Length: 120
Image 1 (tube, rainbow, N blue to C red):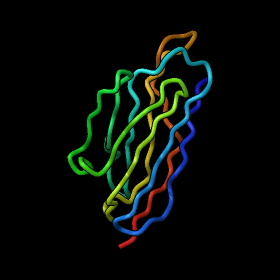
Image 2: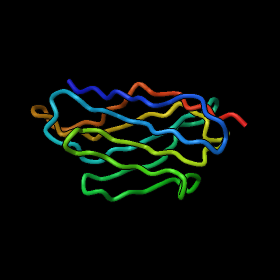
Image 3: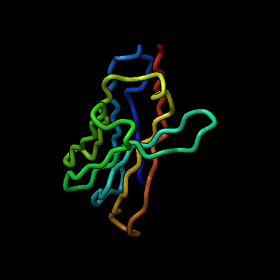
Image 4: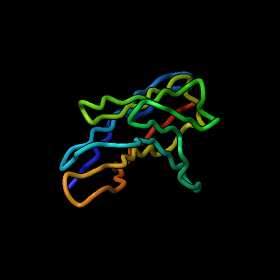
């Protein structure tokens, strides 16, 4: 079993900052890509940022220059630093991890989601 636990969401004013964390635990041999997605009410889930095990990153155009994804491979933890937040960033944020398990191969796992609300 593998679990992803997210933390760090909340309510912030426009222009503020938040840092999300995603800790993976369980029967993990290694983690390939990690990602952050978000889903606003009435909209489809969209990729916000992703990072490979080697540190290569990619971002949605809407967050480039404001958000930074990072990871600590020793801790099996990913982070999303969000600065200059806008009301349109309001959504439930989900982390994902492409996990290579100790047994039974690989699979993508998801966190439970954390609410980020940006007030104007």
